[in-house]
Image 1 (spheres, rainbow, N blue to C red):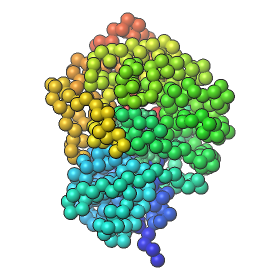
Image 2 (cartoon, protein in one colour):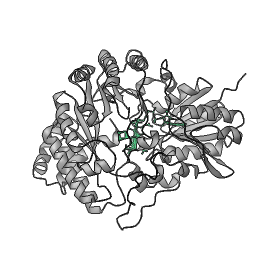
Image 3 (cartoon, rainbow, N blue to C red):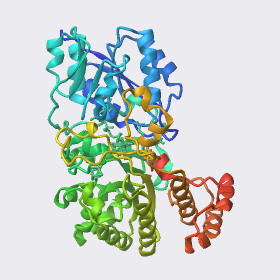
Image 4 (cartoon, protein in one colour):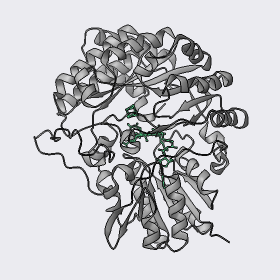
Length: 503
Ligand code: B12
Ligand code: SF4
């Protein structure tokens, strides 16, 4: 009989607002065809280390696979890896997801990680745990695409794997995470909002984006029958009434989108997604009619910058005039555009930031319902770009506020330092002066109070209206600095910050 490996899958704690751990559910679906798996979700089991050790104590696992993105997930990933290493030294520890893909050498600098899986992950993981179950000789390990590991202390990067698309018959094994009610939270979309990701990857290769670094410009849309089966399952079996689509870029080519939109129109579940301004501008009137029927409520659009030159530099592929045009178009079709911007780039930092403030005002003038999300522009280190893009169009060296070269961390532990967590979260960068940091904070405070997000489910309407009235003179007269009264009011009414909590 062939060996059936048993794998423990861990989602390190990152939010108090849990959604289905889609990465681990996808991995489990593939693993369970050849063996078994068990999921520990740190967003539910808040004492992640105890929950993981308890699970590992109940049955034998050959390996543990941990899914990690940069930022606040790294510290719990380290804690759980160290605890497993100490208690179960023979269990192989495998890191997968964005962090080990973008920072592979950094990941393998840690003694508590044995293998880093790069990119899409599922097939590599199945092959890896199977090889390990059979004894894991070097020759077998060397053949597994997308895996990085250590041979006699030297880091080896096996060749990357080509992109693949899964079985159309599959519905994710939601039963593995227990009661679905824990994951169907109330949002502005509905009472039981589910998260789903239909396609994988993204066709674009924006230089600043972790998705481009992960997938290198490849994408794959789901077979429509799979989308219909999954969404019907979520609606009729689990009782979901609305959907957050995590697809990197939901609106791809119009002709491919129409069958998907028809399914959504049939199911009539209000939804939110990531989109691009150019893709929305290219939709025909008849497709917009389908979008309306499908109940798309909000589209998150990466506007990034008001500067055409910067958009070219980062290979965004859209123009500022398209951002303005899509604000108006969305208004016409009853979809709220949620624009994200990257403030304080390393060059022309203050000037670009002020121009962005003005551009945001222009968007608000065109479509006051536009939601605005601001990040600090924190470019990826050159070495973390996709292998196709590494070394090409090398950007200017990054200098900190003292003119010193920015040196990125070389271990996962270093990435847990506050300044690097902030960098990964696009919340701060070494070239920001205190003055500019404060200016941005103040602008965002005034903007957030003047236009509280419709996604805020906590603050009462009267409080939001009051905040908006309080902030209006500052906004009108551009008096952003020191909004002390708004800061005091915010202590009593905490308005939601969408960039921190996610939709
Ligand atoms: C859901 C989500 C979250 C959730 C938490 C998810 C969780 N793990 O519990 C929340 C909302 C909390 C979150 C927060 C953040 N996120 Co987030 N998030 C996502 C999102 C939208 C979906 C992830 C997902 O489930 N995808 C579906 C699954 C199927 O795909 P996947 O995760 O890529 O998994 C595949 C592979 O990565 C791999 N894989 C994954 N895990 C593992 C594990 C093993 C062992 C193996 C072998 C393989 C493997 O195999 C999987 C199947 O193919 C992605 C964007 C996206 N669409 O992917 C961003 C994304 C992952 N987030 C990102 C970031 C940066 C953040 C933040 C750290 C910063 C920020 N400002 O956004 C914040 C943290 C903020 C804070 N202060 O707390 C970036 C990561 C890029 C990067 N440079 O590292 C992404 C790509 C968004 C983006 N476009 O920039 N996020
Ligand atoms: S920024 Fe958006 S369009 Fe560009 S690569 Fe990332 S996900 Fe794709």
